[in-house]
Image 1: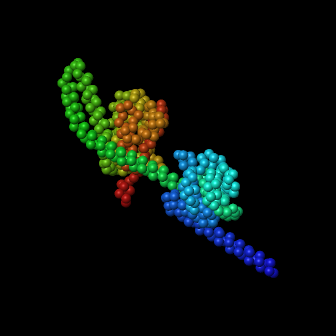
Image 2: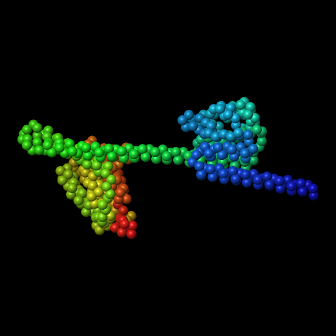
Length: 425
């Protein structure tokens, strides 16, 4: 009877201890998870982890070393309970050695510190009163990015629950680091984008100012050269030179006009528009170019194409630009196909311009919408940039598919927006 009572008391004490330990693990785990989600600073999470691990395991101290991608060494990122003298010993072994030692183990218990290659400074550790170490590697996508090392003042055994707890905490550390790196990458991309946007904005303002300043003397050059060309006899050696001056002055005028269009913020004047009619007008504008270059034109216009709220002038500008690009790509004797259709069950209008020209190489296709980028020797690199902005202003898209030597296909898509929808009715 006495033996039974002793066993019962021992069992109740064991259950109480086990429950208390579970509650401690749970509470600590919740604190770490909250820190991971609430903080954007990795150091706050790591400092909390080394503190809690030391307390929960009744250890002498703990530290976390993270892999420095530049030096390829594991450097101190957080510590608790250790002297500055010991911490000042510097980073531990290189990535290669650490990866080889830890790649097969989630937990490494170091009892023989003097003979274990994972311990860099065993004598100094003994002087700190450390008798045993517990290492847990920190992994991300199967790569070791850090180590949590716990220092104990006496040798002891660890329960399975304790080891699982430490591994889980380290996994949360890895999540915090991954989150921080993702935020850092996104911030870097945002800063780069903001810088580029500011540069383009300043460039646009500067271009508009320069364009206005150049327009007046350019108009004078064009006027006087044209007048002189008319007065000079056709067989005069000056005739050709004056015509070249007039031609180049007109080309400069066109470039300036494109600069002004690129920098100008003009609100679209939208009204119910038939895209087929806009395409027909654009084709009429470039009709002479098609004839002179002996280019075959194929038209596939959808019947009963729905009207949509569009700025007719802006859309016509986009279509003319695409057609001129196609003509210049073919140069002479080729084919251009223009197609209109509805897609997405009649909710979107698609316009397709396909040419049999020389095409665009893959290395340039991703840059065609960049301002001032052009694959043409005399191109300004503004036509497609302006077109992209116009399509975006219409909640539409522009996509280019091309391969060198196989021609180019440009696809425009507009939403079918009716007048009531445009005003939010």
